[in-house]
Image 1 (cartoon, rainbow, N blue to C red):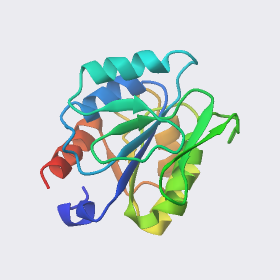
Image 2: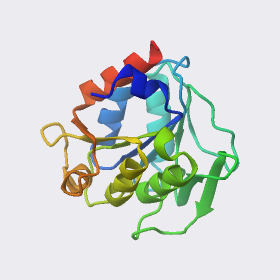
Image 3: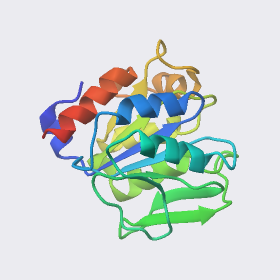
Length: 195
């Protein structure tokens, strides 16, 4: 597990997730509040039209603000931002939300790879990147890039993953510094809230 000292230096959390994501995100986010010290950006692969329902469901069950990201929005600590349908979500040089319409990366939009690449470029070692359950390999190579910058990188373990595609590829690439289940990740988030 990363130490409190390591966690204290970080400035952003980026998360990629696909199949089985809503329940895992609920488990990870349920113990944190708006006092959480970092902004959290999430790419969830989900069928078009279902994102608003997911964000509303999570929002009704959480103590932290959750929203769908808007172009050029200033990211704030203690807030969770989801990539909108049909938009890549990243960060610009001022570290505001950057949305790019319909630009597919690896055939996917929004893609975890785009978000992770952007975090590597703008935040590098100041990032915490988490790759959760999901089919395919989206985000795994860019998780490796983040790890190479000195970022804390986490993949969900096989036992707790509905589909071990994305995190499994990350493990094969040696992209994950830590292999954890959702309860352990939630524990890190709670530790951070109390820093």
